[in-house]
Image 1 (cartoon, one colour):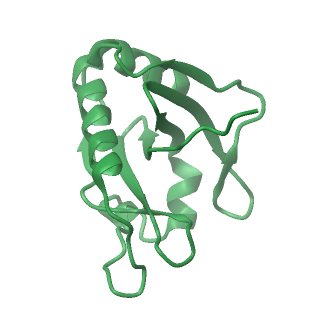
Image 2 (cartoon, rainbow, N blue to C red; image 1 turned 90 degrees about the horizontal axis):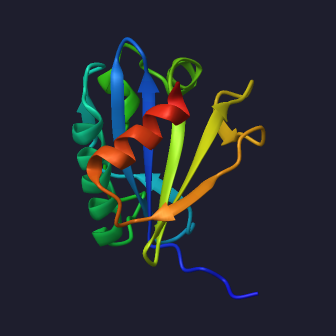
Length: 149
């Protein structure tokens, strides 16, 4: 089996009263884990599918072009502090999470759920979907909206 090269990770966080937070991630150079990078794109609840899809594609582009991050010498993107929640633990109890991973010309979309330990894990009750990265902004926005509804 051939292994796919992951080119980027962007996470869409959603809360019905807050809206959406699109957060690009980069690879941390020493630990090789993913860490959130700036900028975070915030969208209001009434955002159209077209606007949502465009913001996600923008996040994907930022993540795909990001250089490796050094967690010790860079400011961490504490995106959750842009909400009323001051800690990631509280934030994760109130925001849904959808991972959008781009590889080659495909997008892999999967829902993640909050755990009792106050983080996110893959939602095994829903299958991830793989789609062409060439879909329109409106199509991508519609798909993501279905994942969080």
